[in-house]
Image 1: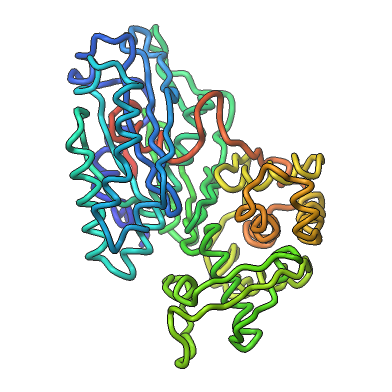
Image 2: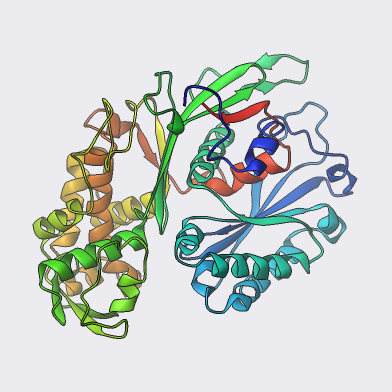
Length: 461
């Protein structure tokens, strides 16, 4: 394990990584556009939804200082593409409206030179575990649809968890100009700022990625990115099944089990005065629920979850989905996963941002400490459905009733899992955007594959 190995990273990442990470060095094909800008498209095919991003950068870059920014975005209607496992054709058709929008957003003269990518994340990684043929069919369907447009289609693939974490980290630090750069007079400029860690919280997984100078007890967690003789040693781990939607299912299962799999289950994480019906198939058909189902039930059986607004009991259920005891290293996060000591600042995005922003705007309080986060979560968890509706009248009810769970989950994950404390928690910035660009893995993915940021090496140590 001590030797250099190319495991866990796809061939695309390794090969493109030889060329992909900082200067705007587009190919001659990319320079053919008569537009003052060049464009690139990435479809972020997440577990619960897909979003199409259009990025742009200056065509003329004599001084190599052009910065890629977000030009537009389009949220695809419907579920994520993994939700079309039984009807793959609909996965492709679901993308058409946003692809048509991209045709309008990008000048016609640039269409043929605009690279188009789709990257799928944890939802498709879960589908691979349950039905790899369905995964293949979905990818084929979306590729066929994308290929039919006048863009330069360059592939649809499923990202590994490590790729997702790394590309999110690249996005964060590229937008903040934290990487070494080459200026207009031919000098290397090393930024004075340190790189920033990235925390992503999606529907099916969550990722933690940060640069570290410590030696790694588990070499599989280390990625080394070499940029013009400067090495960035990056720790990254993706926790499959610990994204928002899968956490909900795991907690529901814990409640059902503790309450003897009855037809009605008290749910302390939901507000009193609210109840919802779920089929057992909704819960059990996830590979994240590993325990065997009782033999006397079917997927179509209905369970009614009845809200009881009890933050203490809710927290207890959430803690049961973590294993904080197992560890064969000097330091672990949870479930026996090695994690070195946290260093530097962090940017938390995706559902991290949406949840913290909800707490701050609803309660009209700032959240800068673990205690403030826990108290805010308890406040939301203690409210009835009527009180929540009064506090947040514009939030959709199906999202509103889940904020208790996600708020307490983020507290447990960051404090007990990732080991942030009163001092280091202040180093987390919860953000949706950096400038006008949404933070996520999509920009980092495009930067790598279009050679906009050429690096010498990306490999596992």
